[in-house]
Amino acid sequence: MIRGDALRKRQALLAQLPLTGEIVRGSLLERTIRPHGDRCAKCVSGEGHRLWVLTVSYPGGRTRQISLRGEQVEAVRRWLSNYQELKDALEVICELNHALLRPDPEAPQPHRRRA
Image (tube, rainbow, N blue to C red):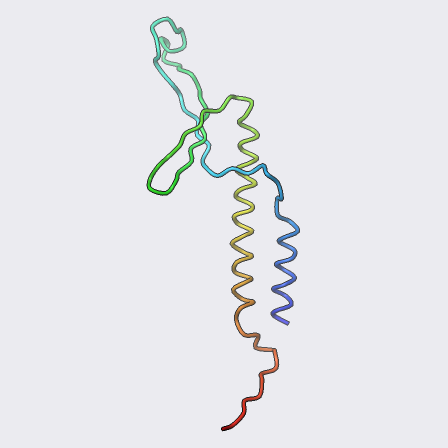
């Protein structure tokens, strides 16, 4: 019974996965750039320029920052959300698979032969 429950839960999770290429790993950051010149009214006033950046960390402490255009921000938010949903679902599926590897207490035990 426990094995059947785990299999059903795993199948239900698989059916809900965002099966799409629209995933990305990283963090979305909003930055303000200032000042970059004496002729820029925004920089002179201290307002600066808003900039969106996708930051991705790699093994070895390397970090990559990708500057985004304003129209890309909503898509990146959606892709980040898809990635997180997929990652969370994979963790649950792994736990269910761990449970499937354990002996089922309700399954009949094989008879041992006496020597």
